[in-house]
Amino acid sequence: MRIMILTGAGISAESGLGTFRNSGGMWSSYDLAEVATPQGFATDPDKVHDFYNARRKSVLSAEPNAAHIALARLERMLSGNVTIVTQNIDNLHERAGSRNIIHMHGEIVRALCNICRNRWDAPKTMRPDDACPKCGEAAIRPDVVWFGEIPYHLDHLDELLGTVELFVAIGTSGQVHPAAGFVQMAAASGARTLEINLEPTEITPYFDEVKFGTATSTVPAWVADLVSRL
Ligand code: OAD
Ligand code: ZN
Image (cartoon, rainbow, N blue to C red; front, side):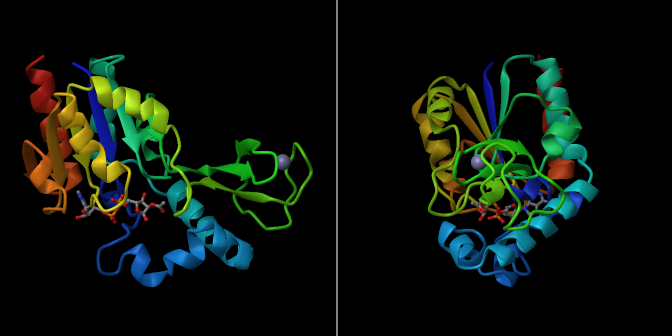
């Protein structure tokens, strides 16, 4: 069975990484236009680097939780048939042992040159005057997708959504496109769909089945159930 698992900030919440849209979430303390758009970066690159430097530091000191670990186990059990598509820029899926991961919004631990598009492992701290190791220009940025930019790997995702048999969304509010539309694309391809989230979301009505609860309790239980029926 080909399974696509779409994850969002909710899966990393219990690892201590903040979500975006709850009260007290990232977008209530920071102005999205200032720190997560190309225009914001052009206006004040120091501020944007400070924001992502702080997030990189939090990610590196966080640990994968039981939900990340359960998904890695599922991938091992169903080798070759599980793809994790994450909107998260953290590396907790990798560190939990998952291998088949698509980072559609990029990765905080990678750097990107805005001039030559070179990518490399990010230093702990980035500054606007850091030079690209390939072209030497001071155009370094975190390798993350900002609002107004096109998410990564969309062609591949389109292909996967055309053949998926089970689509599961975990810990995402379903408010950011294109990921918010994946459930309908998967359903149109004949996939069964399951949402796992703390609470109902705007896209809950599109799923065949929903499970409400924290990721660390619901995801391991769901994986154990699925594995027991293999
Ligand atoms: P949101 O912050 O919008 O949504 C997180 C979801 O996780 C909410 O529906 C919460 O109810 C749920 N949640 C919170 N804690 C949970 C827990 N312990 N267990 C299970 N669910 C929990 O985050 P995303 O949907 O990931 O993009 O946001 C999508 C994109 O918007 C992000 O990738 C980021 C953001 O702006 C960019 O920066 C481009
Ligand atoms: Zn360069």
